[in-house]
Image 1 (cartoon, each protein chain N blue to C red):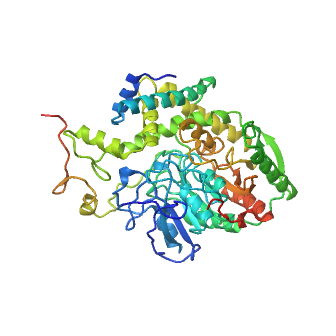
Image 2: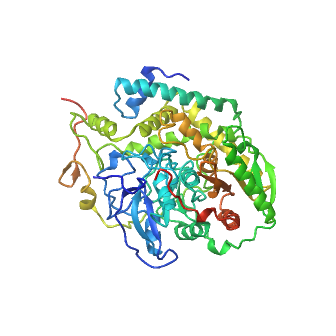
Image 3: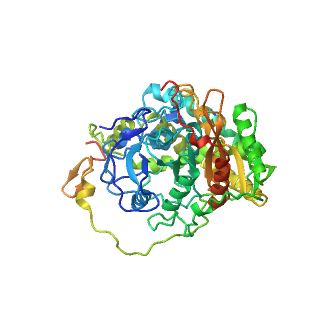
Length: 444
Length: 96
């Protein structure tokens, strides 16, 4: 019986897997989001009841790679069901709380991974990032969260939510560990046809500290009203700090930014409605055989096994793809996606990196937004565009608000631009000691 | 964009979800709100824009047609809810 454990609810399982070799991650412990298939240990539940009995018959490529590099996996981490959420309040097994203030959310969907690194339950963690699910909880929990370029890291053995958007995400205490981990998990995989045959640079060696002449743009559409003022101020300070290190900072424009959430919440649910069609009670997972016909098995298994948010997104996606609505919704969203990509292509001809807040606010209270799905979607406003465009992004701690809650800044690079993204992130990080702060645990 | 109860029932049927009356009503409201928000995409001129389906820049990543695995029938059947020998057993499509 899968149960939430850990002081912050960060675990769905504390089963361990010993290292399978020795390498760059020797001595490190890793938390694995429960969307990553692990053969031999624990069920892989996707934080859903519909996979509660599911013992994976194979291991995800990224899991094989980190074990081969010497890491020890010390548990499956809690998250929003099927990666759907921005607060980790949608796990079928129970929520995760933020180690900096246990009355608040850790962010989502990879809340357990982020909270666990913040609390040092494990040294690093793997999660996923479909619309911000690694970067946003990293910001809320005061740790580093990285989403690679789409196609950089294999999705083989990662439970699929939105196949054209997602990547495995990395959580760490500092940028150096994120670079080390990316080095280990990146690379083409014959078992994932969407990975790209492109050499993996030596990311750790790229952390030279030298950012002189690097051009960083602040997109004006990311500094709008409605952002918590302390968040905007902290990110503007990041720009000043980087300028002092020789970076050339300028204002840029990504005109279609405001349509990102709308496009995302058509494309993501559409792909998810297709990806979650396999959960039918026939070949694996939870099955309700109490009805008379085959269709009853589908209806009963899915209805009792899937949570409210997956059902909501499945229905949204089904509608957007259905006859008569495909052009108005799905095709339209795909066209807006092209315009968002072109916005990035445009600005990256002028600057090397973009600097933005990761999230519009710091961590909100558990339950505060839980009744309004749309309000929860809006937490992704600064992160979804990177997924739509397939570009990498990283969230790095850059301060705290008056309530002592972490603030994250986001750097984005063009596709395959992880090197300069990590170099700038590291250079900023080393000017400060945000990454050495640990939660004292208000209310915890 | 307000969805009717009939539309929600139709979507649920397509998605093979069984919903209670209360759920239909709740989802009807929430989906209508979300679709209302999404309507802003109509502000964007996309007349000449080619849709993006994927962002890898790759086409037709094919593998050689070679068998690379051993059969794992028993192992894979172990997780199947209802089996008959080496087959997955399912209920009848039609009621009698």
